[in-house]
Length: 163
Ligand SMILES: [Ca+2]
Image 1: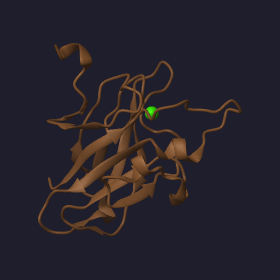
Image 2: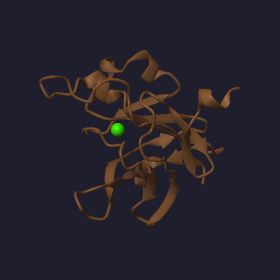
Image 3: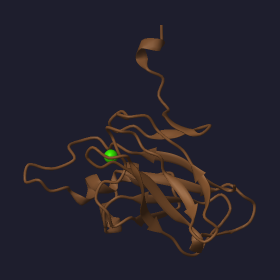
Image 4: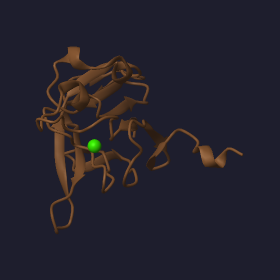
């Protein structure tokens, strides 16, 4: 499939909530996932949805829809879906780099820390999963995970393996 989930920052650095129990918009926008059109022709996003694994107390996880899209994604272009509602001006430079389009899910934090997660691109008309990739529980804080096979993994080499 030309559409591929390529990167995710599931656990932005810093506290999830401030001391008033609120989430600053820039902090929320620091949680994001990227997908790219790796094909050679424009990809129609009008039947594409982004989903994830939602965990509920004591129950099996379910698939929950994060958002849907519209328009055509040109070859080689990357969409970044930020958590929260923006506006665009709250996106920090580090969270802006590396993507061509920035969208907001209009949701609170989406990507699980404790349980890990599986971003999936789904076509609800054909009921085909276009792409999905998982990451392990407890992703490092502030880390961008990159695609490797069917996983999203930390890019940095752990210091203990550098001897
Ligand atoms: Ca998270």
